[in-house]
Amino acid sequence: MNKPLRLLASLALAGSALAAHAAATITVINGDPPNVGFNDPTAVAPVGGNSGTTLGQQRLNVYQAVAAKWGTELNSTVPILVYATWEALTCDESSAVLGSAGAVFVNANFPNAPFTDTWYNSALANKLAGSDLSEGDPTSTDPAVIVGADIRARFNANLGNATCLPGAPFYLGLDNAHGNLVDFYSVLLHELGHGLGFQVLTNSQTGKRIGNPALPSMWERFMLDTDTNTTWFAMTDRQRKKSAVNFQGLVWTGASVTAGAPLVLSAGKAEAILNTARNPKTFNVGTAEFGPALTPAGITDFPATIVTQAGELGPGCSPYDAGNAAAVNGQIAVVDRGGCAFVIKTKNAQNAGAVAVVIVNNVAGGPISPAGSDPTIVIPTVGVSMDDGTAIKNSIKPRRSASLTLHLNTTLLAGADASDRVFLYTPNPLEGGSSVSHWDTSATRNLLMEPFINDDLNHEVKVPSDLTLQLFIDIGW
Image 1 (cartoon, rainbow, N blue to C red):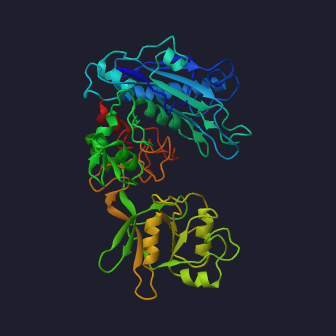
Image 2 (tube, one colour):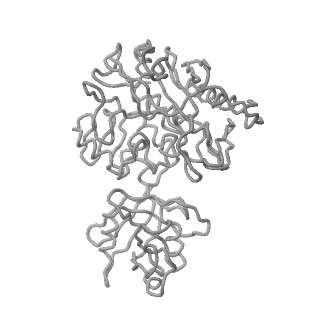
Image 3 (tube, rainbow, N blue to C red):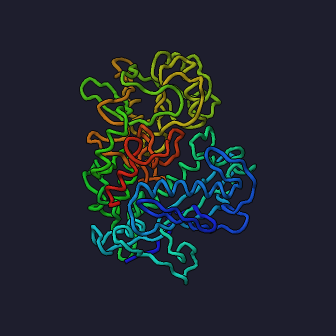
């Protein structure tokens, strides 16, 4: 059984290019019209080991390099077809869709399938079956289906132009020396990873399985909700929908990833501990992009709240008046989200003498990871959920308040639970296209298949640098 699948697809090529490897062959099918994408004749200078002299050729060279990388890591006797294009995707002067990719077909009940009545993406299904299960359909209106492609990919052809993140084009070198530019090699390595199998297939927004009849995906057998101790395979649609927003409560149980986690992830999970006399409470936190990182020793002090001042856009958005400054001086400032940037809230608290800042989410769901940049911030900032923030606020008493500790718990890996099972990305509210089919952003070191392309990725996909290949081994590659 095979089924065309249209999700998470957004990258493509122009013409056709073949990359042959010892372990797998990846064929890139160029779907671009003349003078666009891979066919763009704009003259460019060679850069970072990419010898192309036109923009289109450099783009294709990166594709070839990434195809070669994945080809050396995977094993299949069936060519893997990628239908790729460069298109005018959504963007403006401050934000842009870079691109995306995913499986074109899914297959079940094929020869040598490890599990019956289970969906596999076509590239993996073909590998397991030893034959091409998804041949082209010339009657289709979808060019990727017509040619029988396994992966559909699109990237933003306008990135870096005057109206699309001006000055921030893709870096097309192969050497990872991207500086402040977006490293296309890493982005493409990530997106092809989705098409090769880093993709849940089950609908995370509804919890429903795809197909008629509806079947589980291979992933469901490895996805465990730690609150209910139940896999997605054993859950109802409603339970899967709830689990998809269970912050740091959904883990991958595959043996290869779990064994590799201590070789890749560093020790130290960020936590906040409310040091109540009888039952100390530990809260998950999101760490900020700015300011110093938490340490194992951490910071312990009393939490203090502020009041919203007259005329300010939100709590903590204006320089503190005398009352608020007295409240947080030498304490951990607890500030609600909203009204201004996280860095403004932290800088105002720092100027008032706070030793750290806890930003409380203003909507239901998990903790936030405060974003932004300000090199003058010298105190740590974390984000907590609305519920946990309320618990911290309620602990503040005129006398005998509980202290609060912000630290790294070195008994746990950054990005995994106490059994070294790596967290999947389950923010609340759900983020369409990102939730579940990525590793959690708490992972350190940063992993290729997180929902964001981090600057420190090194073009590797396996231990000791990464866990993508380990997940592929778990699902049958």
